[in-house]
Length: 99
Length: 468
Image (tube, chains in turn orange, cyan):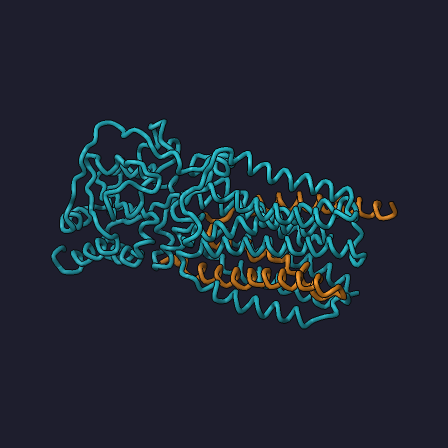
């Protein structure tokens, strides 16, 4: 029971952040140039690989080795997305020329 | 102190991510988007890494190096393979979320991590279901796009399929509710593992009935799921940066899914449960007319006498690797003062915006590309519409043939141009198996053959000096 109180507070502020950032996301993405939907998708892929910060904690903290292995695999997967996502986005955007 | 730094870093990273997406509103500023994104990522990663609870560094370095070793080659794939790469990255995103959710559950069980409250448990279950279904679903989608041999390309359907699919998901959710209520009894870890297995299975079941024509929509929906699984991970870890970045990704996937569905006149549920491509047997519309074939010389003459040409490319153009020949033709025509526009259907290619990237790679300026809505009102003033490897997106049957699977889908009005030239590889119907009456219209002339070869011959006609 002692744990329920802070968790409840946390819960609502997280939901709050989620709803607001979804609205910001919808507003910003709606204005994205239709020419750039493919690079947009690889860019948002790379950005959502921010999940890497969660994996870093699971991999690097003083946890049992089996847990840390799961973390390391997750970290590898996120890192692959970050590297390939940003690089291929830039590669595609370079190709869009006016004349 | 380091906590405050971490919080500041998270706020800074969030702002940079929003700016990054904002700069995507114009190709001129778009490359700033990458700089902002990379900076935000770097700030967030470093701030996390320097937290005091991070005591082991070896595996972190190893995983990061591994990420570079796999990520760099993945970023160098040919642009026709970008849809597969995108699906694969959704799979990786889902996998990361699923694994962290699993790790956090067993940590809580072993009293190492945060206690297993109802809220944390429900977030964990949501993360694991979303993460693992995105993982296998996206792998299946990537396999279909890559045309891996043992994954069937055509939709696989069987009686009661939707019942089975929803049943699998329902069992996973029910187990999730049980585990959430009693997270630490003897059977709970087994139930948790069962949820993982069911989510993995559901991802596969979800994608096997979906055909190639629906891939742009499916990739967008999976993009949304990948974002949502990052959000769920944020809830589990109590990390607002994850929630924000995941929500941005999720809303992007949502908007793209809506645009793709609208462009095919389908609903979400119809894409996921409708198995497009199975309803192919429709009666031929009207009497069967014969097409008229044109020679390359004749086609070149038609193009040369035009003052405005609209080129309508389809995925067939990319399959034939004909983009660079298209560019040469574009050069030849613009040199003669002919206005050339490319009409891009929203579902041209295999993912949202795919055709734009394929044309940009061939150095065609983006100012020459026009969206369907922009070009359609101008089609009646167009002298020649040149259709290259596109089929369903120019099929007039979409306007009136009620029984047709493409009925109601918005199309590019190629048939309204004064003359239509269509390059087609074979005399067979297109992907959806529907006859295209555009090809037998009075003002349509067909050029049969490989798009690259036909375009090459056309360009030669212009270059040889035979035409001035």
